[in-house]
Length: 289
Image 1 (cartoon, helix red, strand yellow):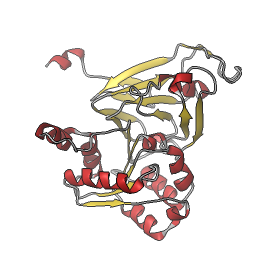
Image 2 (cartoon, rainbow, N blue to C red):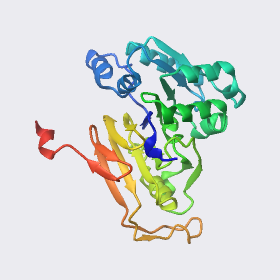
Image 3 (tube, rainbow, N blue to C red):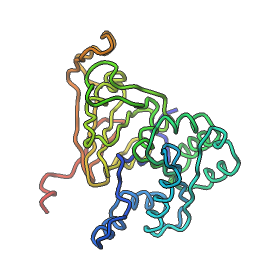
Image 4 (cartoon, rainbow, N blue to C red):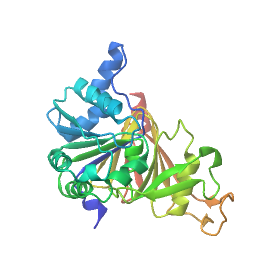
């Protein structure tokens, strides 16, 4: 199945996105008119869209679900539901299946990405999501932090930035397989995760690594066309032209050598093609207009 035939829209977010909870008027206006969750609502069809929040990754799902209910209500959304899945059995319930079938947008919260794959991966609602994402234009799956990382097939499950660039510093797990061409990491700038994605791409050099800063996301259409949204940066790691990569032959804990790794730094409005692996940005002079 070619990933580039996917009709739905993915919106991975780097975590800590603006939820419109600042007290000043400027903050609120920016959230309503420009924030990441505003873009999520727009892609899903506007304020009448059925939005289903899944806080499965969180250790405090009730509180997180309520925060997103408040944020989407502030944006004017009228049909927002929290689907609180705490076990694989919950993912097979008819009430959950009905919500996923009727949703215009599914929003995964942050937390522990392994909880998402363990409790949702391989279940009926996972199958429905995949089918709708493949076949329905305008169907949106968004996710922040853990919810973004779980979108991939090869998923980063953990790894300390302080041990980065040695073999074995990053641990991988199977994700939901929505966008198999990517590896996604989040809180990327704030938590110094350059080494995590570098090692992940060394393990899977045919895949592209996306490091998403906080309050920053990508709108991905047709499994290919990516546009940066939000206030920060997306770092793209392309290992397709590596001239040296000793990841496979090293012992665990040994420093790695990676040569000719291509890295792009993208910000709001910049575009990236997964299929062609190329960047399209505004002309430099446009930044000064």
